[in-house]
Length: 286
Image (cartoon, rainbow, N blue to C red; front, side):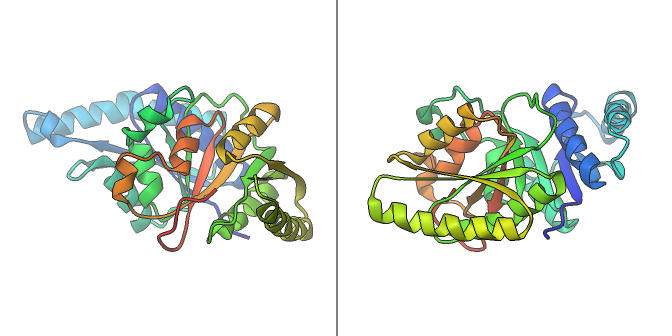
């Protein structure tokens, strides 16, 4: 089973950070996980090194640590909670990615600045820190755009397609489902009968693996040409708590004017999304 113990939460003095930290606390409390809150400050915003240090000390002692303590008291089962401070000397998303890689974190939790009502046109010209981290991070990344009202994971959506590498995300979904005793919902969509048959075969193989792993499973196949709409419809019709998708690493120039599937999901989803990186550059997959 994939181990998910070390959690990184980029942390600032705002409500989005608190929501991300609370979600990480909920997750860590179920697995006796370890949380590290990372705060990155830009020294250029201060007049001197002394001014910078004094301001950081005040921020840490007066605001950040009390918030961390509040989360720790709410989730006493969390194994440990730490705060790390770094000075900004490169883009923020690179700080997060490098810190996660150097310290071998199992996943990152980020409150994205996307909104479910954001149009695809707007998404095409936006590139948030969360999305940049999703594209380049080696470890899986949790993102969510709205307040997480359900502080639990009971139902996990696992969308399936036939793109190479799409099965990379299955072990992560199985691990989370077993740790939380959750049900996995398999979903595929196609408009051609041949593709529908291939997806049905793939879904049966995954279903058998889930049953063998003692994971409850629900399967659903629909005949539509827009998979994103199928995901949105299924999410709205079911009490889901998490979605697991796959993304390919790296950047393509087309990302500047085309909104990839994963970007649409991250920006529009009403439930948290965990993005699992493929092992090599591929088309975006679900």
